[in-house]
Amino acid sequence: MPHQTISEDPEPNSANGTSDLRQRKRIRTKQMVQKEALRLFADKGYDQTTVDDIAHAAAMSSRTFFRYFPSKEDVVLWDEYDERPMQEVLQIRPGEDPLAQLIMRVREIFADIYQKDPELLLTRTKLSFTVPEIRARFLNAQLTLIGPYLAQIADAIGAPRDDLQLPVTLAALYSAMIIAVERWQRHDGREDLLRLLDDAIAALAASATDLRDTVLTAAAAGTRPTKPKAVAAKRKS
Amino acid sequence: MPHQTISEDPEPNSANGTSDLRQRKRIRTKQMVQKEALRLFADKGYDQTTVDDIAHAAAMSSRTFFRYFPSKEDVVLWDEYDERPMQEVLQIRPGEDPLAQLIMRVREIFADIYQKDPELLLTRTKLSFTVPEIRARFLNAQLTLIGPYLAQIADAIGAPRDDLQLPVTLAALYSAMIIAVERWQRHDGREDLLRLLDDAIAALAASATDLRDTVLTAAAAGTRPTKPKAVAAKRKS
DNA sequence: GCCTGTTTGTCAGCTACTGTCAAGATGGCG
DNA sequence: CGCCATCTTGACAGTAGCTGACAAACAGGC
Image 1 (cartoon, each protein chain N blue to C red):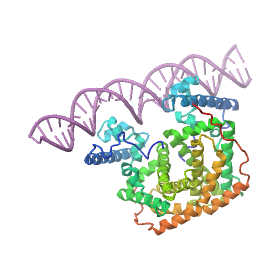
Image 2: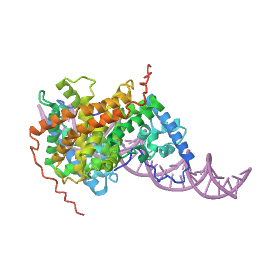
Image 3: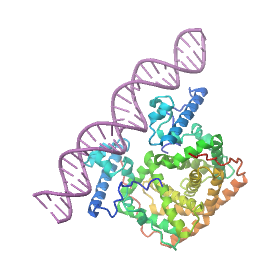
Image 4: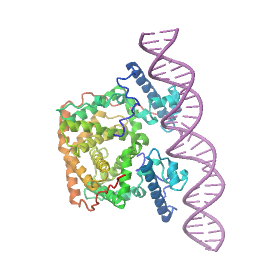
């Protein structure tokens, strides 16, 4: 796993020295910096805003800025949820349909962030789809989330290690949600986010038959016209 | 659409002055630079290799390097296919199942690149999944490809403009293929790439029923517990 | 009111990347 | 063969993102 959602503090820092009070203060500072940054981005555009600008607006040195956010991009991507440990966020209960749980959980998270500050979510999301570098990191972060879920769910339902079905399903689910969020953002948040989410997932479920037909068609159309042998993988040193 | 797959030459440059000979020479230079770069990456690692190193190995100034590749990342991502205009690459014929055509086309492209130089594809792919920045750009490029296809297919089958079904299906297809390629790379190319591709798509088609059940479960579990109103979208200026 | 650990600013430095401009290579054409 | 127009290249200077190191300011607990 290359890296988690967003950042990763250098020190484990959990039951560690950092007091709970200091932690919350840190979060409040982050929120304030983010707010200033987003204001500047809206004013002058992302590229035209330098980190120095942001730091200045937030009344700190740029060096300090980087102590809060590992990169300029992260100012947009960051979220309260990135603060909590991953396990807490995506706890899958055994027994019940894990996929359904996942969907519900994602809905809850979106609903929560949305409800705390709709405009904030919209601004961040627009930037996440608009600015190429951020878009790339955003998609990466989303799709990388599949990894951790995967392990949990695989354990829960006892899927084999090398199964393709589960990762493919999760990836499909995630991309459906990404499509929904993209549309929400493109319509300036005028449509209901949760409704779009549900619709996208429903659309995915509905496209099942199409896909089955298509796979058959493709197979009939002469699957495996070329048969390359696997790479020799001649690494020894 | 933020940007195309990889780069974008400043000038239209199609039936333009640049002679066909110069164009091919340019491509050969790119291939040579890429080769040198990949060699260095394998030696010292991506981060430890500076652009100056690459330029030096390729017997050019770093300024010239950037005339060939817009960024260091692009050295890994670049491909002959990025050289041809998009239309040529993904021509969808009307009538036949467009999804099936798409699948076949992607298979062909992979097969082509693979067959020309298996090791090269494997090296590039490994870096594309391993180095965070490249991974992000890679996923972004892949998922962004959906856009152009989408328009074409929508026209071909006469899908409505605001349809969710088609984009969601395409995204699912693409992510299935990404999963397949990821697995191929993780196994050092020891498995057959095209076979993995087919398997992943088959797995996607097979997950249809799961998804349908899950959607029902999720819906029953109390879809829409919160009902946020759409954002006011109060932009006027 | 001191003592310890955290937070901050300054400074110096690296790397990716860009604009500019003049010098050099190239290819077409007479 | 040689010249001109055009494309390509290198040198130079500069910007922005980001990092390490260190010392000063700033907590909070006793």
